[in-house]
Length: 286
Image (cartoon, rainbow, N blue to C red; front, side):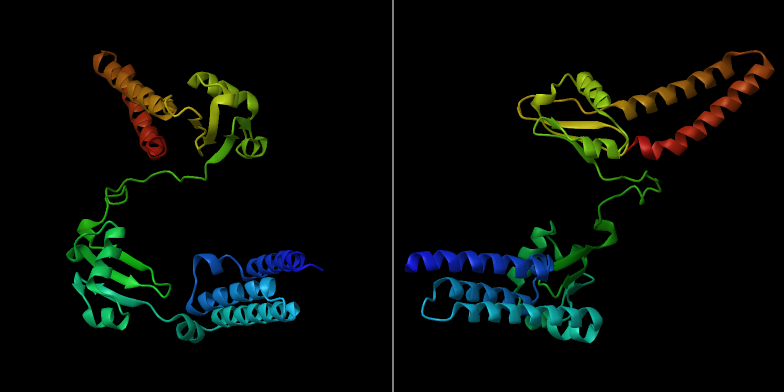
């Protein structure tokens, strides 16, 4: 067999085996590499290159070595799942770098981190003053987690005592100008509804790059032509405005009527509607 053909076959085999072993190790290998997983990834990659190019050696020995490395990595991951001591020993522990706005220099030295590197990592978190930091912790993965002091944390509805409605995952119902029936039926809608919503927006189906429906049944579209602006759905805002108008009308009727019985009825209805508006406000303001 010619050398070039043998290299092609070996490379194809190495790619298939490497892909299979990587899938076996799981997504954690890509997203959260520990020290040992980093070493394993480099070694398995080197073995794959060995299998592909070293024509003078027995290529199957490289495959055996790759399988052994994968088995050891799986065994260590299993041990980490079962034992916290093993996790601490293999991955290490988190280290506090800043506490109450004060940099802990000894911990910086322990992690071999300079002040410039710390400030760089903080800037990536949109933090520019260490005094604004309540805690900054270096995770075993090397990432730095930051918690700002309470007065510097972003304002949320919970800080204002406002309850908001739950948000479900939006469903992509149009992609590349084509309707996706499965996600559409998942949220209990059909093509007729979708075409009706597109008509309201004045948009043709074939011009839609991506269309999503949120948990409240509102359609959002992104067009192929980025110069065309599509108005955002206003159903919830219009409904809220209508309810508030009805409330105001009932209050006005109650103030203008001279009939005591009618006045009491209008005031009672206005109060009930006010309660309804308070209940649905968290949903309508999302």
